Length: 242
Image (cartoon, rainbow, N blue to C red; front, side, top):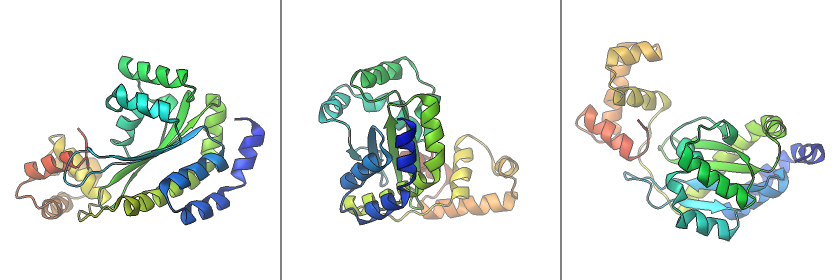
């Protein structure tokens, strides 16, 4: 990705918004993003979680079919550090900053051997219904150039990730009824870590009364009779990870 490509892409964000809004499918939208932002590949992954584990994911990608087939055959989804980080965290991340173990390193090396690029950038999305998705861009650019480019378009890409998230829900025909707020998710996370209401209040710098109100609301929204049951259901739904 040279300077001319960067300048060209930076000047077309308005066009990208317009085209993905009008796109009839996620597949068409990610092809638009690939072309306008001149990245190597784009992948959108919607976790199909509705009171159950991620077992039927909705995935659209510009990767070649040969790589997708190999990825599935090798079971790479179980060791893919991008997927693991994207569906457990809430902040965008550069692939070059991931902690990669030996098994993941082998997968990443295999991907590079297919010419899929050494770096990338992923944007997790989690909505009020606790549905998660992940928009990822892969690059063939030097790390410094790639990071400089992404930092100039990061806000626009994040907004586009939310647009694609909503379009994917419609395309997949998903229906949801659980609506947890950010503070409720934080309280759940710390509860799962074994913290009591007083300790959670100290961590989040809010009152213990407020924490208990959040926990009561969580039990009601998840239709659970106890907090341990609520934690177990939240982990199953991937609202939180330990």
